[in-house]
Length: 84
Image 1: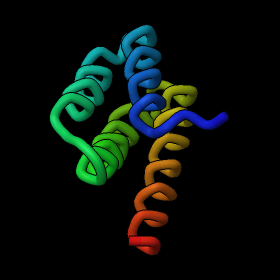
Image 2 (image 1 turned 180 degrees about the vertical axis):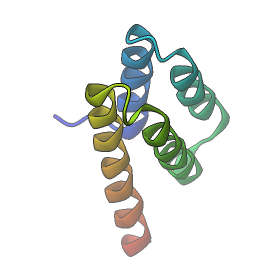
Image 3 (image 1 turned 90 degrees about the vertical axis):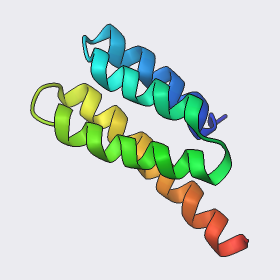
Image 4 (image 1 turned 120 degrees about the horizontal axis):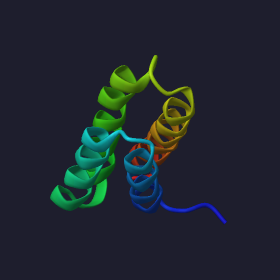
């Protein structure tokens, strides 16, 4: 079963914090608490894009996890745009 993007983002925030990426974790947490619905998905995607730049060369495992979430968010957003 696939988790929804907000659940995945929450789990990723915890993973980033455990990996020492406290600012990245805080950015995801702030995005999660400040938005709802499609606005949440779009804000999470934007946050992921920012985090990818910051983490890319420092932590390949975290980079891959962020990229997977960003791609999942793209799928959710594109599905919502074509069906709505």
